Length: 232
Image 1 (cartoon, rainbow, N blue to C red):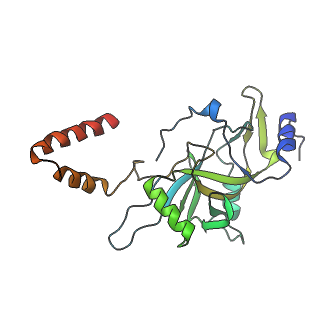
Image 2 (cartoon, helix red, strand yellow):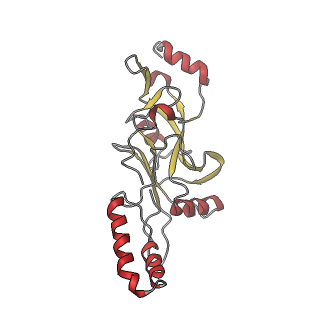
Image 3 (cartoon, rainbow, N blue to C red):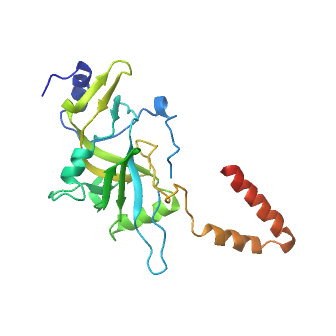
């Protein structure tokens, strides 16, 4: 290993030699990070069987954390190749419930990097936490992702202009749907257009309108349409 920059040496002394970390961004300084990608979901429901497939981001590239480190595109590629869904590793990267190693949900069927960040598709097993995950992703209670990893010290570079350490490789071990993500920019993908899908909303709205005197139906629908346009 080449000699590390003093800032990286300082970080290693602070966190230990080979910790398994969860990413914790500096919320105060970077709370204004872009959120235009936001929104994951359980795949659309079929007539015979409800899909349990969840599409989700677990890391967004370029967001610094409280330690001053930044995950960069490509930092997960080696781990995905060695322990991803297509590998033959005895331990493959696993989806955990809220980072709990004793509460795995499943293995992802898709795990890759794209222009946004670390993307995965997974179908939780039919176990209590898996069923809870599906239910709470559908409701929107769970809409955040996080990841557990080890540093690769000689694949980190310090930049004096930004006073940040950029991570070009990490050892990725697990991904987790979480209540509050360390990167609040992560999200569950709602549909192919990135929009939230609520299959019951239209029916429930119509049921409510029918309970109101008929003379107000047109006016109420007009007001709802105006709200939708304003929201867009």
